[in-house]
Image (tube, rainbow over all chains, first blue to last red; front, side, top):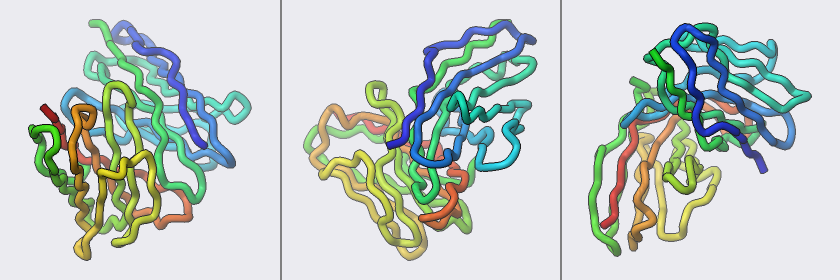
Length: 113
Length: 116
């Protein structure tokens, strides 16, 4: 079975400050990890993914994530948050031969002007 | 815009009824996935089709069924609807060939189903 934990319900950050959204995962075998963002009344937008290779992955809109195998984590980061980054962020995991995505419960990010 | 389209955007119906949700994948994508997003269950995988064939089932109720047609569009049929079926239903598509690496899934805007 594969699962994702996003421990915080809401992340509050001041505009211009670094933003971190935490994600830990559990999967058999090597993980494939994804981050998606959901704006109100919209679908999920793909931000970035880790399949293999460099542990630091760069994605859309200035976001990046670091894969840490020993800590089974894949935290999402942005050096300087914008008010427009306020949204719901989902971490997801899958594995080789299993295309279904298992999502975390999501983190509401609120960037305060 | 992901390139995945879903219709209708909103659907309001009564308990016991049957509805059909439609999804058109991105051009060139052979895989279609259906997910349900609800407040209590979060985002749950329902079913995966690849090039017209069912490839994986998740937490999909027996009252729900899906299919993928030769033109690769997919339909999710929900019958004997209950209040608890009210949710946002997403379709996603990818190039991925089942049994290999998980390719990026691109999501449609969703269909919001309200059962009264």
